[in-house]
Length: 271
Ligand SMILES: NC(=O)c1ccc[n+]([C@@H]2O[C@H](COP(=O)([O-])OP(=O)(O)OC[C@H]3O[C@@H](n4cnc5c(N)ncnc54)[C@H](OP(=O)(O)O)[C@@H]3O)[C@@H](O)[C@H]2O)c1
Picture 1 (cartoon, protein in one colour):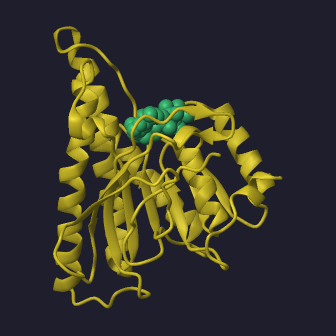
Picture 2 (spheres, protein in one colour):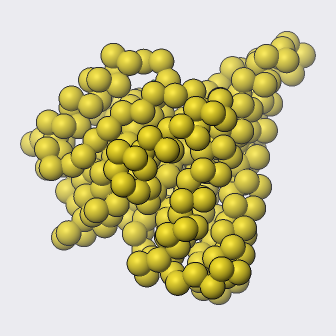
């Protein structure tokens, strides 16, 4: 069975058919699995990467083979640089015509105890995992607000909730994504209401964060066994009290609602 057959769309016509998704760090690991799932659901894919050009080309070749009808592009850039973030978003909009779904997935770890952590260890992790997510979301949100529709999903971590020995920088960056997500969401709702903008094409604009647990890499993508998914969701127009908050402990956490009013959960793919 081919991968494309394994990743059957959950919806007859694909939940995100015709949408354009930018996944930062999309050419390997969890990001690559997210790209595969979104492509299987009909999205065009813009996958970001930083250094591993060869891996990115391999990813492109396998995606093109598995999803011959999908438009797949690669975008090199350092998410730790505000200029690169803005350029990547511009590039995606120029090449695909729009940007509907942003997945802030790129992330790094530089683990050391607090006593041994250098200034650079701290700043690098914050720059990529938190500041990068802000700069890229800032550019994407501007485009999404104009269109009145979009999805922004940041991949945080359970470590952002619990903290961890040797991961003060990583935990702070992932925890920071919660505040960033909630603020972006509140601002998005505020701006849309202020502009009295119609709700895009009916699906509105949502901003969410998901918090995977440890996800090990297996041959066909990350194993999903350890995922838990803490969801923070804001919607435009708001339905019920904000924030909507809940947990999803599905073994196979899914992207099933990306196209509905709110992203309920996510699945990185895999067996
Ligand atoms: N794996 C886990 O157990 C786990 C658990 C919870 C949360 N998460 C989060 O899930 C996300 C993906 O994790 P993963 O394990 O799949 O990571 P991974 O396999 O190490 O892949 C990281 C990806 O991010 C890209 N990247 C790294 N630094 C970058 C930068 N400065 N600019 C642009 N792209 C950059 C890499 O690009 P190159 O290929 O070019 O290097 C790569 O594509 C991360 O945010 C991570 O914190 C992971």
